[in-house]
Image 1 (cartoon, rainbow, N blue to C red):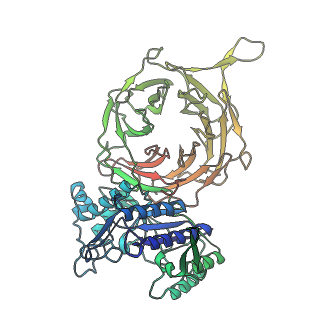
Image 2 (tube, rainbow, N blue to C red):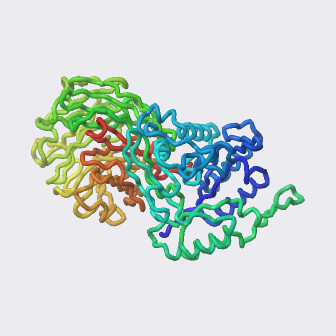
Image 3 (cartoon, rainbow, N blue to C red):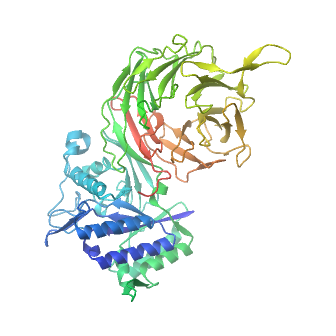
Length: 633
């Protein structure tokens, strides 16, 4: 698919949109785009000021009658398919008028200039928070939140924010709808900048290589764009921005006798002509969010440095959000960090400090840790396996601490289970009773054995062996499925029924299979490429497999990560197949010792991605929130 993007520029509560009639005409433009099946973006200026006249209206002032009308129009644009972005705060500085002026530092300024930011503004937390650029970002995001306007991305006024000012902006938001200042303006691809600073990691830039229709020579620019896209490849992004008020002379609003409004819209308008020529050449307009799977979010540094610290994610306190769980192998100390990543697109989120949960338990690298709710109380507990002896123990979560669980077998919840290199230990609620069970998958025979949680221990189901004998043998939940070292097997809920299933991925061929649980056994599920759910996806041993519901539809998806290169691939679960996203994510958070993770850190329940760097900045963790399946706003 050849993809195009359109953005309606400089929409604010004043100026070219400062009357009710002009707001109605803006709605007419949105109606045209909706009828044509054109998703669109809206660059909103939260506060419009004209210092020469004293005009000053902010979307945060909902007591103002005109602001209320403007916000109703913004909501209408959103309903018609518009994705709202923040276009600066006032889009001006000093004596300049909004939409015309610059807001952030740019080197060509000669008078009445926005201030240049010192190095400390992006290197030190206190200086960052007190910087001029931060004051504008904070005010703009707060105004949008107060007004109830959902913001999806950011655009610097005139794309201008040079030097340290740019890095302050990147410390506030992770997705920019503008040309990347680190690359040529003619760039036609979405760019992922894997920037490492003390305060943030990475930023995404979605470009507009076609620029815009200039009001001083609009016909020439319409013709120029239609010529230029002929030279674009199918992999290029045909993005541009457009000032909707250029359409207003083509729109006539005529009151009718019934009190309604008749609209006459000249089909030879600039926007009509652009849409026709793009479609004629086979271009499809897409939403910006469809091009960016994840948005770089918060960062925490100086956090448990060293490779002997293991990070897991789990809902330890029962609030339907994941926490980060750190296990220090040498000491057996366990700590929790709460990560609340709501407030998108704001990434300047305070993550607090880690909290000690348990000390001196499960010491040594021979323990293998897992998380799951073994007693069904809604809080994830910690499960550990002594890989040398096949002994399983549990520490129950009480929200603010972990308590080693005696159970009814003197701390040993299970013995002699999943012992040996051929067994892959797994956890999941395989029978759907609300309690996490443990399992072992045998690489050589393709057999799955499950020990169900009673809330006090794990217990296998035993069944009669050979006919004519009294021998009892462990129940096999699955036999003769995938076998061999090329296959990686993981647990997840792939049909949304609340029971743990299995997915198998062959790194040599890129083949994928799924086996679904019915509560007593697992049944291989025929995919649309029977028996496969996907083929030739994720070929190579550089990839690591993670499981999580990245689109929030209740079914787990698959994520492949190359930590060294910071590349992330996602294939969404479509019930009988895995469908890879058109757009990979990255490079982001690359590192030779990087450790990837997934977790539910937002209220929308979509799983976010994260990366731990054990040796970077005293130990760091970085997060990127999922935009997959997110309705604009």
